[in-house]
Structure formats: structure tokens, C-alpha cells
Image 1 (cartoon, protein in one colour):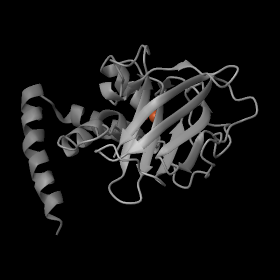
Image 2 (cartoon, rainbow, N blue to C red):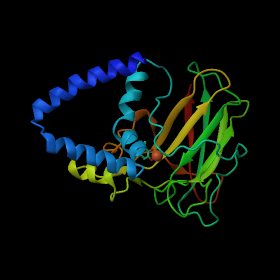
Image 3 (cartoon, rainbow, N blue to C red):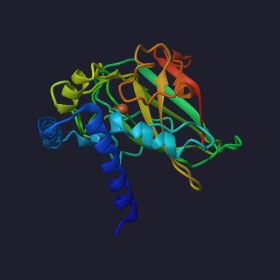
Image 4 (cartoon, helix red, strand yellow):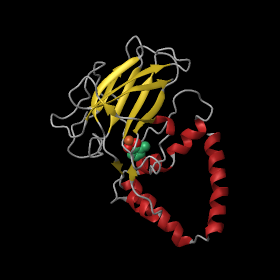
Length: 250
Ligand code: MBD
Ligand code: FE
């Protein structure tokens, strides 16, 4: 027997009964829920729905007393085994990849500020249209996903493009749900980061960009104020943007 499952099940029954009474739900409402859940599963949107509406709460409870850079949602679009690129290399991308050139660099340290050399940095992001490789049609398999390692000073740099805002597909069951609750479908443009230090705990986080219109109304509630960064004109390159004071404290 899995005691946690039993305890959560029992708690859910209690809460469910309260909700039924409070909102006067009947057998039709019950079947509407079952049918919608069935659609959600058949459309392959269970991970999407859960990560948009529940993952943030799971994390905030879990990390409320943890020091260092704030974690935020992993989301449904992480893929293991991204291609390894050299530190200061470019993300795998199409020759005509749309979007502003973006030099993303940063430093990884422990919570005391000591550099963490040889930390694995897994980065994935949407393209300029807000689409993720491996999930949207017509994008090469490893596009805009990469793994690299910090140098002896805990530093890393990668050349990529500025991602677009992400929209939840509006035609499916998650989109239908958004209509019911009167919500727009957008997440602000973001990079996903997963840090794996040689010793110590992993950090799952994201980077957002100052000025984005969805920072304070992210449909997935994944924005943390401390993770908002500012894009600046890149010095070294003829054109492009940079954001080079990012620090992750693990
Ligand atoms: C995303 O791109 C994402 O990062 C999350 C957390 C949920 C849905 C889409
Ligand atoms: Fe995302």
C-alpha cells in the first residue's frame, strides 16, 4: 500500500464533497468533467494542463525555505539528451532561424558566491514564433536545445536567438478551459535552464525579459520577479543583444 496515495485520495474525497455541495454540482456536471478529462488525455495535453495550472504550486510549497536562485516550472517541453555544445558555442538552430541574435552568458555559483566549475547547463527555449522543437511540426529535432558545461570560473556563454512569447494551443481542451476561465493563452518569452552541479542539488529555473507584456499575467504563473533580466545591446558583435550579468546561485 502507498500511504501517501491513500492519504491524498482521502483528502480529495473530503474536498470534492465540499465542492459539490458549495457549487451545487449534479450528475451532468460530473459527466461534463469526465468527458473533458477524456478529451484532455486523448489530445495528449495532460502534461501541458498540469504544468500550466498546478506545477507552480507544487514548486512554491517545496522550495519555500530554499536559498539561492528561485526555481520555477520545468514545463512540458523539456527533452533529455540535448546535444552538447562547447561553452561559447551556438545553440543548434536553422540557418535562417528567425529572431534577434542573443548572447546569453552568466555565472554559476554556490549560495556563498563561490564559482561552480563544470556544472552542466541544460538550456531549451521556443523559437521566435513561440514553438518548441520536438512538439511543434516542422522544426528540426534538436532545435534550440543544448547542454554545455561552465568553465573553471563558473562562467558560461551561448549564442542563441531571443525566443517569442509562447501561446497554449487554443483549439484543444486546454484552450477550451482557458475560455471558460476567461484567460488569455500566453506565457512571456523565456529561456528554460536546468543546472546540474558536480555536487549538490539541481536547479530548475527560467529567465524572463524586462518589458514583456505578460510578465505579470503569465498563464502558467511561472514568473518570479528575481528571474527577470534586461536585454542590452551586445558590445562584441555587430548586432545582437546580450544579457551578461546573469548569475545562478545553486
Ligand atoms: C511552456 O513553455 C512552459 O514553459 C510551461 C511551464 C507551460 C507551458 C508551456
Ligand atoms: Fe516554456
